[in-house]
Image (cartoon, rainbow, N blue to C red; front, side):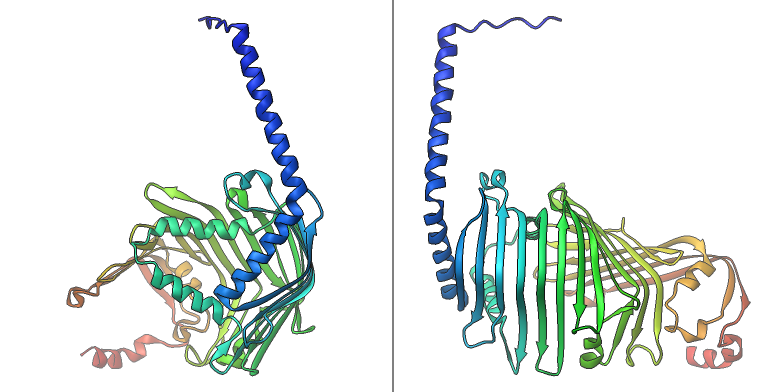
Length: 424
């Protein structure tokens, strides 16, 4: 099939060329005017931002100098942020920020590059106050002003985009210290050097002035809504002494990984797919167990759904404990009466694999227990807070050719009489 030729009169072609030419000239002229006035516009925007920060948040923001160093890159020096009657929140010697030009046409501010050196961010809690109170007060005010029905999928989409838009394609962070002071009883400091080069993230974090050295490495592709991070420490486990000082608990692990695989609308819902995994996690807290609890390997492949009035961990999610697999389903429905739903399904699988997947030290009586055969497990829980008497709960363990080969530390057959008494 031949496409018919369309003949356009020359006068129309000339008119079109003139219109296009005039349009390009106007765009170039406007761009030239904007370029020549950009320094003045920048100063006006900076002054407006400082005024708004003071009026809305009670922040005293000071900037030593601000100016363009490229087509779309702004460099600022000697930046300080001090909440009213509070400790200094932040002080940065140099900060350069470059934005992507094309997204600006649609009103989106996406970072292209960030260079930051010699500064600190310090969060301080004293008595009943902190130097981040302005964030909590602002959130409370916003919540009282918003009287309309919340669109949860849209909120989830906007929040995620706001986070992703703030991740630059390239970054160079030098000598940046993040501090946390909890009533002078527990303190943390993280002296951080980090780079992002074409999405490749590398970082070195000096914890508490040489106590340990952490690394957070990974791949960031915010445009594709894909992130991947792995945290680990040099020559030792990654742990926070703060937990021991504050909560009398110990938490450590070899590696911690998290990944955002995809995010977007699935029908009317907003779906976020990701994963979380940990290797050799150790937990010690007297209220949980008298000894160390060790999780050798755990992973969760999660699909989170945000609906019009609910948030759910979809049943397509899979949790792994070593070689054991379970499929959890958790749903929280908002409204006048809140609804809680929980389902756990473990397909028929090797019984010893499930037993080996239990955290070591959590069930001491099972240590050393050897079994053969397979088991299947199902749990179902449903609670409508408006009608709590109608709560539903069922838990079923189905053995298949199951047999105990060796008892563990506790031989349950010796406690048979006691178990019967308790059952009665």
